[in-house]
Length: 62
Image (cartoon, rainbow, N blue to C red; front, side, top):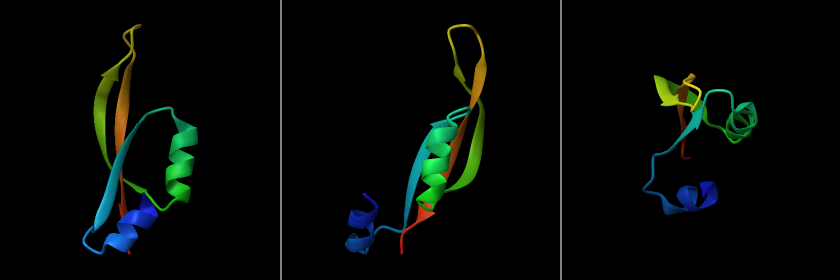
């Protein structure tokens, strides 16, 4: 996807979201050049009632 976006020439940035606690996903996205741009507090409610934040990340396309 990154390569396709970079070759397109019209796309300025890529965006994605991940859920609090998913450290493996966060590490991968940061390695790929994404950075946290915002947090949606208490965006996800688990069956046990636990509330988790959702993080938005962006990556500028070169």
